[in-house]
Image (cartoon, rainbow, N blue to C red):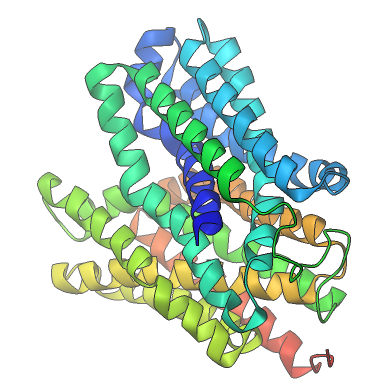
Length: 383
């Protein structure tokens, strides 16, 4: 558990830094004397960098042993975060963000393989759920606390705090990561999945891009939706966002247990169907405050379920080495995030904020349809 804890904290750091500038827009804009749009590029540019670099960097990373690679990545993260804190101008801050994004790209390619290798296949779903809960905790706790710290002590303090957490994760990794991750259970990074299936793997990537494009559209405009459609007060928004994130964290045991009991091949389409249903519900009854709160919480659970089940199945059906497979999944998530950010504003201007929930539901439904169509025309290969 200590080794998984080290990987969890590193993942929390990487997930927090990705969107932290979004919570510090005014402070960064004023402190660096640049526009809000320029600060926004620190987030969108980060996602684009991860999408572009994930597979090439993972291809290089597979030549490095897993333990020193993870330790080196966390050391580089701590240095890059400190570089962000000390950046005297926008250009150097952008450069440090690109470096952090490169760390992010390789981290997600390696960490899921390393975490899966720590446990037997019978409980691997639960291990992935615990690891992925770091992303939910980063949303619920990391970004809000980082935003608060930046507001109280200046935006540089938030990046210093991330650097310190990175150093703690580095120390834990040195102390607890086994020299041969998985104690002999894990496959080498050059190995493919237990049941390699190129067509299924490509379908998983397509489903991720579809669902993430819609989700990011809806996620970006959650606050306007709650204010304009559900007519919540400003004071109710933060507790509602906390509710969504907490629901995702709380679903860790459920998500991991589901994968371990029924297998990822059945659990993955179920997760996308749930995502479609919850966003459709948010669109249909979003004007009723109680129901809007319920469906908002369910979207958090559905996303976490999708993330966990998809991570497990992608490692099972990977037709290429595991690092490249994990990198491809990470890139697909970031391609969807980039497309969602790109088209979300256009959708908002043309059809209003309520339409974002509908489009998220339709794209998640399209992703589920693609997955189910592929399953209906093929049988999983025997191990």
